Image (cartoon, rainbow, N blue to C red; front, side, top):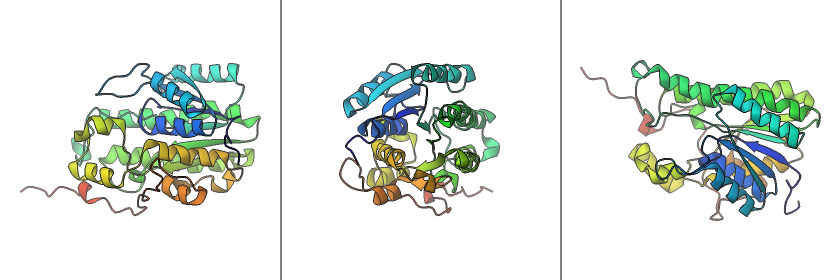
Length: 292
């Protein structure tokens, strides 16, 4: 393998101004890819919403790739179409799509019974993070068909199999896992792989700025067992560099398991522990005891 196995790769990572999306963009950049990133934030939002398109593009260039930042509201199909019109006009193809964009309430409801949640929580998560993945993939596939190869990655989590935060969150994660599996079935004969990838517990910029966003027990777990966003980025880069990636199409893949297979590490030189595939909810998400 060359030092830059993705030097001829054109990749798109949605929702890449911070967190997992930015980490994936940097992992692809390390491998030499041209990385197009989308987000709604051109400039940093400070401590409340750290990260921005411009910062990600600068980091991509510094990591050894070439970064292109495009403003896009993935809740607006016309905005998504504009992104793909530009990709088609300027590059004529797309090799890798990472569906990562996700919208959540400013304060995530934790252990709130679904009958007490406002419907807007459901609508927000399923519109941007589920429907948006479907629409983006619809635009991406025609750019991959002519080349008879491509890779679509949906970012997900163990929330797809076990209760995490609340009902709408789990439904969204489970659905993007299923979407990857069913897209893989329809794309297999075209040489295009579709997978879902689970990072572990992410040490994100937003969590560092606002540790109160998650229950204290979960924050402790992330501090002790967490991984940087770049770790999952290196997992995606390894998949994109694998000429036999079609053997994995339709699967749920864990970043730590891929590290053991492909031989990459997190920035500290270690492989973080893999999240469990056990559907049993973590203790922090145990149901409340009814009163009365």
